[in-house]
Figure (cartoon, one colour):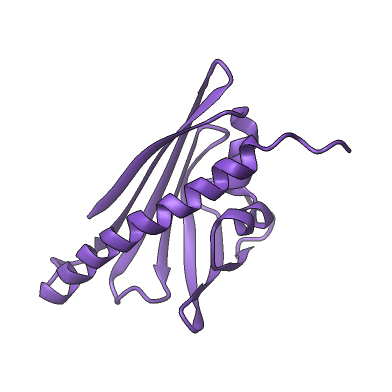
Length: 155
């Protein structure tokens, strides 16, 4: 089960990359993100790990993540486990960025993966995830677009 979209931003690729990769900037557009901390020290890039805490309903959920692809400033892929996912399920999220003529293109994809063939309950969860995931993603990307396309603040 995957959700995919493409969005164009009027900003340099480096600006969009910073909002996707820097935890404090992520909090500005990822509704519910309370915390995103490295669990692998100062290490950045493929193989680094992190923990995200996301407000989901009335209580926060903690997700453990690993960066599986890191090609600055063009490609980031992470794998998230834990939180409210069933045992054996993980969310793979992929960001691909490219720039042409002052426009940065973002190709985004995410998908739930299972260690074993999903049963009826898991397939139902995937269906619900897809519907709500698309709605939430639209809101995230609208906010991200507003932030990265805003005029740079004078220092």
